[in-house]
Structure formats: structure tokens, C-alpha cells
Length: 249
Image 1 (tube, helix red, strand yellow):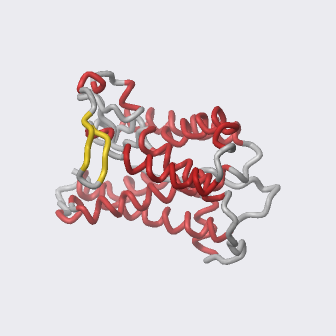
Image 2: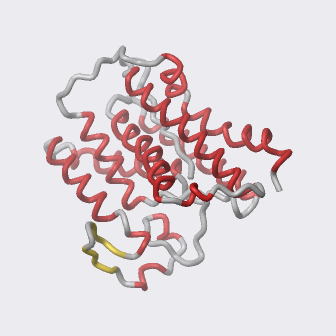
């Protein structure tokens, strides 16, 4: 799993320090989650609770926060293309570095890769989605996220109802990026376009609703972390790995 939002509000516009604080809290949780992943996967210490539904929910809450906030903040950016290029470079760099460290840590299509494509898709469909009222768009995106959540598992549906998709759709390595997970695809961090594009777009529609967020409500330490989430994301695992070298098997 990997996790970070990386879209930052343009400095020419006022920052939502409250949003930075939420992102910072998610970054701290991400570091703790990855520390647990390292212990469970790279040492002889096994964390049984790490494989429970509660741990899975912890992971989802972290990544879901990042994607939702990325969509929320993109409306305030005047340099979307620049941010997209930076994200793409960082994503490719992560794939390159993790391909050297081993199969267990290889990240082929993680959250940065997903976010990069979300940015690209957003730029392509922005005019269309802006024609949909924000409240309706938000509800549609949430519903589509729920319906498509299990595409990687082979079906559409929710609450016990499911429509199984043809197995022939799940044979292409590259279609795994969309969520049609093939048997030969493997990634330590996997966030396919479907369903996560809809969570990203839900964040965008959420930012367009008329509700008041106090820009100056924040916890300074968390806001600082949130403002520097990309660099922290890039360096936190190497630092954790170096610190854990004495106990890595």
C-alpha cells in the first residue's frame, strides 16, 4: 500500500489549513501502517492482527482520504498539468526503485500511478463533469464507487448483490490498471482506476458544494506534514527500511 495525496493548492490562492491537517493526519497513519507492513513482511515478527478486516479498513481510510482530498484540492490548482507531470515522474521512479528492492516491494500501479491517471482523466472530462450539479455528481460518484469496488474481484455489485464479469476480461496484464486484475499482475501497492477514479471525482464535487470550512482551523504540526506530503511519501519507506536493517531477515 502506499498512500499519499499529492495535489497541493496553488500558492496564489489561500490554503485550507484544515485540509492540510487532515492530510497530515493521514500521512502519519500511512507511516505507521507501512511500518507494520515492513515488520510483518520483512522480518520474522508476524503481526496477526495486520491481516484482519480492521487493518484492511485502516488501510482504506488512509488511501481513501488521500484520493478524496486530491480530488477536493484539484479545483483550487491553476497548474494541474505541472502537478500531473510531477506525479508521473514520482510514480515511475517508485516503480524503478522498488523493482530493484525485490518482488515483495515492487509497486507497478500504486496510489501515485492511479492519481496521475485520475488527473489526466479529469483534464479530459472536466467540461463534461462541470455540467452535472455538484450534489448530484457527488451522489453518482459515491454510488459508482460502491458498485465498482469489487471489479478487481471479478464482479459489480454491493450489499450482497453482484453481477459477475466475463473471465476473458481478466487476462491482459495492462487492463489490470483499470481493475481487470490478471493472474500475472503483481503490485505491492495496487489502486486501479476503477473504482478509485470515482472517489477522486467525489472529492472534486465535494469541493464545489456550498459549505463553510474555516481555512485557519488546524494543528500546525499536522498541517506542516500535510503541506509536504509528497516528499514525505517519497522518503519515508527508505528511512524506515534503513532503521529496520538490524531486524530485516
